[in-house]
Image (tube, rainbow, N blue to C red; front, top):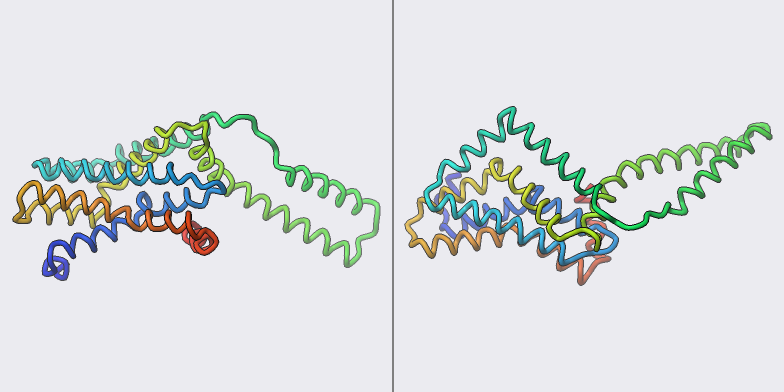
Length: 247
């Protein structure tokens, strides 16, 4: 903390903004959206702009003298009622996502093939004596079934993402997710709170203070914007790193 207070204000704010840029709302959710098979750059950009504007508005309220706003929010979100509200917001987002119209659903052929292969393997096992090769085949089938179950569980979140990014979903849904992420995180983002305190105490004119706040929010989403740009122009290079980060 002494290092931040001793450094120039601009450098301190930039460092804090980059730390804020590594949070779930400003980086991990955008990364998960970037991993969609069909990239919707406009939706990802809308998400990032929305969450940046949210933090900008909260910062403006802070600068205008509502200094207890963040403290009250932090106390509220840390209370039992706050935890219930956060849980309710999460459940509501999931319900809304699954209720989004997505058109006709088709069962992936791999599921049908897996079912046919499983029945064929079972029938073969009942007609023949179990041998070494048969055991190997059955073990492979069991492993494939386990992998399919894990993929199905992970696929629920992927389907939520695909619904959010589908043409049938309204852009307002993306904005709602961004606002919910901001509301849940704002009272727990220590770098943001420190930066707002530094700006409030800085000897700057109001226009400069608000300009610095806007720059702070822009730097917050800069890492995700960079990943979005790389995903567009160099998808093969960033696909695996994004997958590891999302995992």
